[in-house]
Image (cartoon, rainbow, N blue to C red; front, side):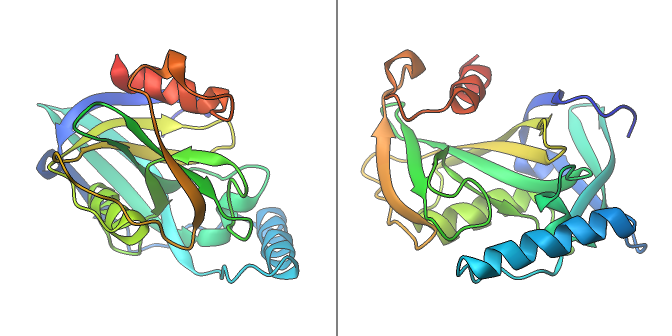
Length: 216
């Protein structure tokens, strides 16, 4: 990929079947400094009682958008690199969830989790498993975190955060009457109004920006 600026890299929507992922056989090596920061981050998590463990995740090496399809070039990389000062294009998926009335599912992250501990987040999100198509991560995380399936699921955007983390952002629409079940990664949840202007004070500016992009 070229450039290291944060912001919108590609804008959909795409059907899940229009997103492909090709995994490299070569692992990404970040260097001694980045590895040392990852080691320190994992140690800090263990000190506060988090069961989070290191392993292999995904890093976005390149992407292209052609003829209505999003093609991702992904390489195996150390999962904990995402916890350093620069996530080095480590990749995660974020599945934003709206119900049949247009409300947004928000969950307060538990104190032990690796990212956004104690803060509110939208929908479901997590790391891409080794060999997994990041578009499939969206539905997996939705099921794991909220025990629900989408009536409609689309891939909306590819975004680089200021931390250097890459997010594949999806939108799940739930059927009328669908119910969610909270998982241990959250200690509270709420349905925020369809209009982000009516959201409560705990909705951080990045969440409002994300909703604005998706609603637009």
